[in-house]
Length: 478
Ligand code: 4AD
Ligand code: MG
Image (cartoon, rainbow, N blue to C red; front, side, top):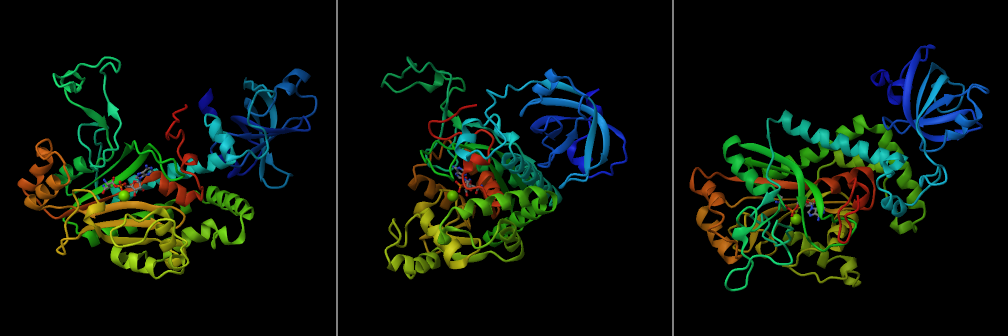
């Protein structure tokens, strides 16, 4: 019975010839005891259901409230109303689930994003979140399509791991030991031999290391999974649980890596532009309205669609870290002491620096290469200058770092030496080093933060609004 349902999106795109259809969805509004705007999430556009006067009894009419779910059987007829071609002349109407108008928190009016975050279980039912999550879906699908077309093998790397892939110590521990009275060694430290896995384990910060193992057999692989960081960054760009796409390619150098990343980003944006035009236009409109509240100098120079088109149609700028620092040192912003954080060779660029480069100086995505080795991970290939590594970060307007990647250190001695310098446990990582012992090859890879990508494409400004149920410091509701 239920699968005879026609989706609102398909119905709105069809010819109305008086055919009988069954539709189901949730009431957005009900006007004049006659016009129901019904939404089923297949599109932001509502389907108008016309209920003839006298068709329903008083009690049923009262139960058609915002949020209630309905099954309607009726005729698809050409609409006389503005903004839609097709509407449904109801023949019968069944209320599947009531929604108490007094208690339902979503009213047909504009709610703030902050308020909607508190009711994240219901916010999918708004136009904004409908559009955001359909675009998120399209991007996820396009990612698999892109790598599949290129012959990459999709790897599922472990979520629970004993290694710290980034060596930054920002991991969530996974344990079944009782926290009030854990087993201890003689020296008082916790005895992880008694833990579930017989050792100390964590949630993964990155699937890269396992990706590298697979790339040493399949040549080109990618992962797309959840990653976890216990960094206490309460910003609009950081999540404690986020999704990351990590391709890893044998026989690639840094330039091949950059070329792939640029092609990849353009491909998935183009896919969303082609398949989710309506949603993106809605989001563009939303952003334009929101920016009207901002002072002139804080508004974007381009609309959302225009920005995405610009990114697809132009080369990303490519500069070295050293050049980036020089640009910053010579910038009016630096001279006028507008930067809060220090600028000099060796710094880990802060978001204000990255945003200056992409938003003020180049006004387009920028790929920065050759970072100081001190601020990058142990696995990055060391350059001949002894100071820098073959790293590349992609910085995007409005976001900052969206991709982090590198050519990997494939030389066993150099890698082991660097790991020791950085206090990475060399013995425990024997399996990683084995790739450098047996048929090591030049290889490279990168990680794209999925939510940052969704932010960029949807024009949303807070990362909490592009993942269904955000995990951030002091927050794991839903
Ligand atoms: O630069 P990161 O830390 O690089 C890695 O994890 C490498 N293992 C990737 C690789 O080479 N395979 O993270 C990669 C990207 C960042 O550029 C950013 O977009 C995103 O992941 N990211 C976060 N997104 C949301 N919240 C956080 N806390 C994030 N940390 C990183
Ligand atoms: Mg990074």
